[in-house]
Image (tube, rainbow, N blue to C red):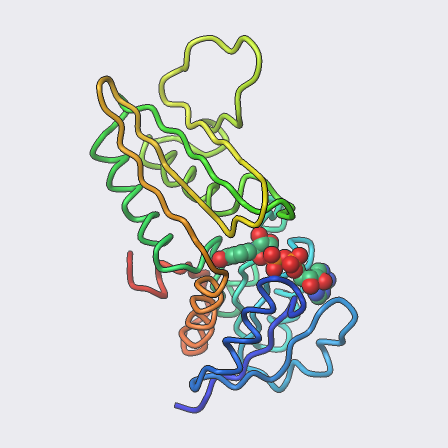
Length: 246
Ligand code: NAD
């Protein structure tokens, strides 16, 4: 198979930097270009097979529409989308192959898998709390990864994220209700991304944790997803599909 030709959108950001550096070294890829705010993607897009976006959530729907019009596959790593933006991305995936993942690391995707198993086995006698920590410049909270963990826990409890999530606590909140999922976002320093899911029962506690120490782990996963998505039929895929963890 010929090399997969990719364009990185958001190339001057923290993730863009890692993607450009690793993409240039990857023998399976042909890194066509990186584009950021002031660049004209439309003059370059016909030279690529796959667009990889790690930029800003408001950009994703328009970019997905462009990918549909130009028949390009798309990898979206950006987080913090509104419900309307998520719907627009899903609509584009009816026409093109699209990987949309809040976290591209192999370890975090294993954490998603283990969280589902733990939630199913432990059941509602174990209170569930999600704690995440990221660097001080992160724009959205909770992280996309923490949100996905919340969605997995909510599904295992037979509910939805919006119904069961409780973001932080403050004041006289009273005893902890059963079936809530606590969500706590810490910010500070240069933390790349820590996530812990706590299952607290009577007399014992199970904690599943992942700590990322380099953005290269996300970049390598997104480049792997770009290579994988090129050959797929139209559809909305996650990193679990790329890794065969479903
Ligand atoms: P960043 O702020 O360092 O970089 C974002 C870049 O996007 C900047 O260079 C900015 O100029 C550019 N940009 C913004 N709007 C643009 C537009 N309209 N057109 C082109 N470029 C535009 O942020 P970051 O830390 O690199 O993170 C980017 C996104 O990726 C965030 O949403 C973050 O949460 C997400 N992220 C996802 C994963 C994952 O594994 N899915 C991992 C890390 C970060």
